[in-house]
Length: 89
Image (cartoon, rainbow, N blue to C red; front, side):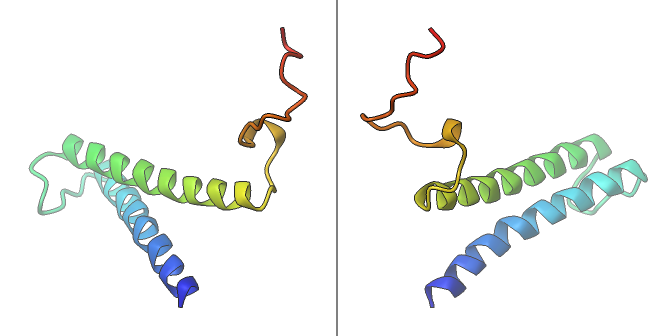
């Protein structure tokens, strides 16, 4: 049941990102969608939807991989026993 809920949580931002790509594509071809009065506003809203969906999915994946310790050292959450601190100084 929890996996189904997680899948639904991932589908909603993915669908919004796909709709954002569609809005930007329609603006490039000069197709004005009904809720938007001008093309550049349609592009801005599409770009925002795409970036918001992409950021949500990327954050979800990064959080999951941090829990499983499958990320590079620079993306790990710093702990008190990290010995790599101070090398750049």
